[in-house]
Length: 281
Image 1 (cartoon, rainbow, N blue to C red):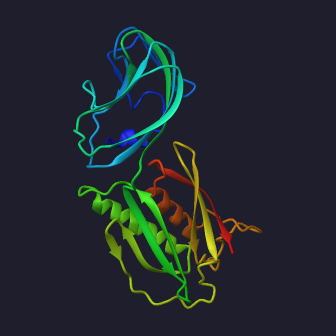
Image 2 (image 1 turned 45 degrees about the horizontal axis):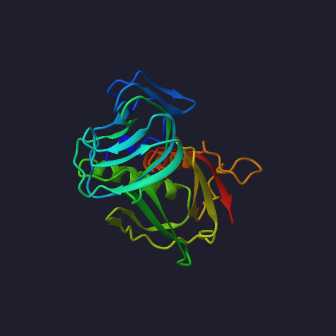
Image 3 (image 1 turned 30 degrees about the vertical axis):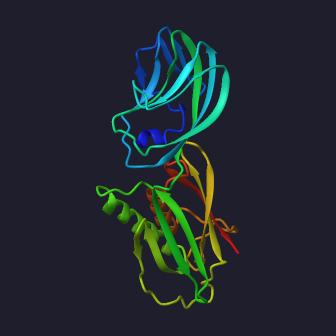
């Protein structure tokens, strides 16, 4: 499926990622929702062409309010492979489909059904049920206690593999820059790196001495956290004065934040912004 479809969380940014289907008289964004007035069949918006990387299952959530007439949700273009509708009234629903036999070049459409219609629509959730790209890291302290976490990344392809591997390696360096733990291994899909470094010697290198990283998905504003063990509090100026909150402008912390934001995606596939990093014990 096309990257825009997966990453577009709705109509908050207008219709820049969508095209008009058969030129409806009105197609606009009102308070974050698509508003369509149609005077003929199959008028609305579409996004495409979509390209499926292979069999996968996607969830599409939709708030739909049909003022008059009826609406359709089609996946597959003018001769849709999958069609949902006619739909009437005010609905909030979620559907899914496995694109096992998906044909490249089709599109996703929200359109009128059978003539004149007026409706509002808000795409609230478009995401893959399966993780596409992923970064995973396993770190250990001086007592061989482990801390492991996994974060989603852009789907890895032959064309972008080296670039994504470089982003993941930079993220490892960023994490190591703010932690006293040692990386036992890190993974990018099937690629596992085992550095073979000796165990840390500092007594404070413990998995339960942690950085709590709070980050927000830029498009959906969903907030997520991840914990990084072995918080290195010996770094000069790493904490704001009189606080357990890290100074994000400190050299090591800034390097971590830059690497994190460059490599990590939110749960719906959008870019993320680190809000804070705080010390926990």
